[in-house]
Each structure stands twice: as C-alpha cells, then as structure tokens.
Image 1 (cartoon, rainbow, N blue to C red):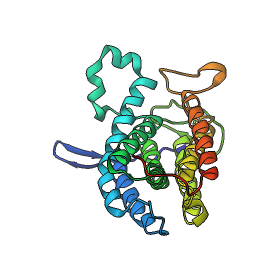
Image 2 (cartoon, one colour):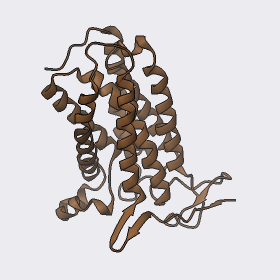
Image 3 (cartoon, rainbow, N blue to C red):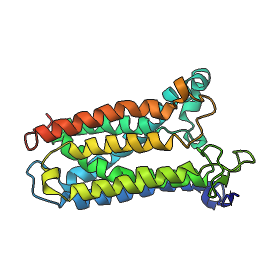
Image 4 (tube, rainbow, N blue to C red):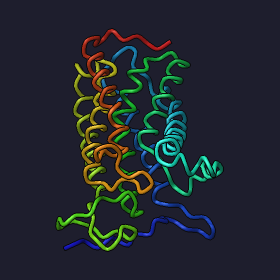
Length: 271
C-alpha cells in the first residue's frame, strides 16, 4: 500500500515569465511570522538587557542575510563541493536549489554576533528570541520540500509511504513531513512553553541551547528515515552527513544550557 503523491505545482504564482515558487514563499512566511513572533516575545517580562522592538526590526535584514548566505555556503561546502569547485558560477544560481539548514544556523549565529556587538546588546538574549522563532521557518521549509518532491525518505512498507515522482516506483517515508513535525511544530512548542517561564528567561542563552540541542536530536532521528543525498550516500558505519553535522550542535547546545543555568542573570551585554 502507498499514498499517491499530491500533484502540487512547485510554482505558486506565475505571471508571464515571472514565477514565484512555494519554496520562496516559505522563506518569506518564515521571516515575516518569525519577526512578528519575536516582537511579541519582547513584551514578555521586564529584563533590563532584553532587546527592544527597534533592535528586532533592525536585525531582520541581518537574519535574512545570515540564513541565505550561510545556507548556501553550507550546502556548497558540505554537500556539493566537487561540483561547485569545477563550476563556481553555479554557486550564485540560487534558483537551482541547494540550501543547508546547518549552514543557515552558522550564518545566523555569525550575524547575531556581529549585530549584537555593533549595537552593544546582549547577544544571548537576542539569540534566544531568534531561536524561539527559527522553528517557524523550518516548518514551512520542510513542507515545501515535500511539495517539491525532494529530500524524500527511504523505501518503506508502512501504510503511509509515498511514491515520489523522482524517488522510483517504491513507496518511501515522507521524511519531510516527519521533519516539519519534529524540527518545526514540536521544537516550536517546547520553546514556546519555556520562553513563558520567568526563571528560563532570566538565564540568557538557555533557550538558544535548547534550540541547538533539540534541532540536532530531531534531525538525527529524521535522518534514520531520510534517503541520504545521492552524491554523498552514507558515511562511516551508515551515518549520514546530517547526523555528522548535528553532532557539534549537540555539544554546543549542552554547553550553552550548562553555562546559562550556572550563570543565570549574570550575562552581560556583548561589547
């Protein structure tokens, strides 16, 4: 038994030669909803070194740049280095696809550090807000991965297996949906519950650590069902590239949680 793949056109809107894809709209929705959610979170509590709404508004372009540059560079380095080494101009053809979520995280962290230093605000508090909003974009991104019929799962005999257009004749795990639920909905819910607790907000960096640890765990679980990238395959002992890249996030997440819990209320503004 298998489910039919929903025949959804990857192009959401087409006006003459102009085509707007669902994937692009997912990025727009993720940034806009994430921005509004951060503005809502700013109103929680009265911590003195919490970023204000102007800080959030001004950081939005930095976040967009960090996600796009980090995601693209990460994909080039982690997944297709050989191709882009021989065809460097392909790096700039974003419409051909190719983004790395782990690279996007690195890009956002870099933008946070630079922006917080320039504005002399607490980098951990800003990172906590961004971390709470990040699962929104991840959710929409994974849904559009499913719409595009890409990054599908391994062959399966479960009743909800899907025959993807580019995945051969056998049903596969809809791993994109698994990831949208775990990395998107579940992680968002966990962070939403935590951010509304005063004792958590008083420990800058704790929410960021939970995000890094949570994403890494959920991604590693999803990789057990996801078909590895064709050009890479499995690495050592059946480990996937996604699991390898998640390992440093586990360590970073644990380190941040430990630091924040021990130094709650003592973090100083980045300068």
